[in-house]
View 1 (spheres, rainbow, N blue to C red):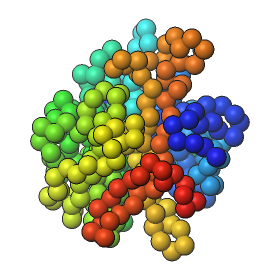
View 2 (cartoon, rainbow, N blue to C red; view 1 turned 135 degrees about the vertical axis):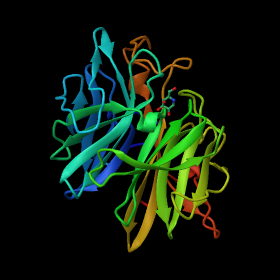
View 3 (spheres, rainbow, N blue to C red; view 1 turned 45 degrees about the vertical axis):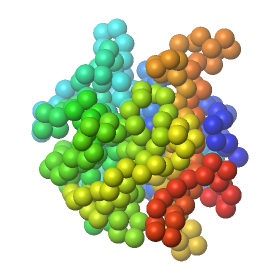
Length: 319
Ligand code: DGJ
């Protein structure tokens, strides 16, 4: 069994790199997409039937990915002369309208975090080579840590940290999932929220997030609202002062015995100082990045539907 905070491996025995990612259920499998910084890779995908045994399928986005412009203006740069760009927190959804799997992520130029853009890519299959369609600033805004959320009415929302991370923006997407359509909300001005993760329970929208301390973990928070374009509550503590040494990646709703369970997936980043580095300087050939791992916990709810996690809870009831 994969253990929280330990190195996770795929069924082939290799370290599982799907950091800052998401899990999508499609075509009878769970697909786990996430960051892989090794070599020329940006995003890898694994698949599983049981959320426990993960089969590596493909490096879906790399420095060599095919690029293709789309209607709106984007920057197709996917590598630098002397290195890579950064592609972080990839999220993938299936678009019914176009029949494509669509990836949204956070793009930076690889030298600093000043571009603060969205980037997008598409593919006909969940684990094929994705075609890169470039990066852009939505309506000119900065856009850093991000997530996608598909509502049960078919609408899709993108949330991302803006104004140097000070505010969290919410956008409604176009039906082809290739652009933002409307900036519909700005949340928690000056609170510096990163790592947003959204789920919906009993018609209410919950947003988990972290504070902004680089790769170091901090106190997580939750908030709830009646609609994505409406008011949300203030931030309430989630987990302990380091969110059990993790930062939200996503929340996976899973149907079990006619009931929906909500599972918290957090990244336990392994960093040096404030930096996430792939330098092979750990002394045993395991780089810092390779040691980044995951925390998976069932989300519990109080009688008032307030979400919480307990560290001892891992798989207690067999999720
Ligand atoms: C923590 C974030 O959640 C990461 O995705 C990344 O943006 C780093 N901060 C950058 O410092």
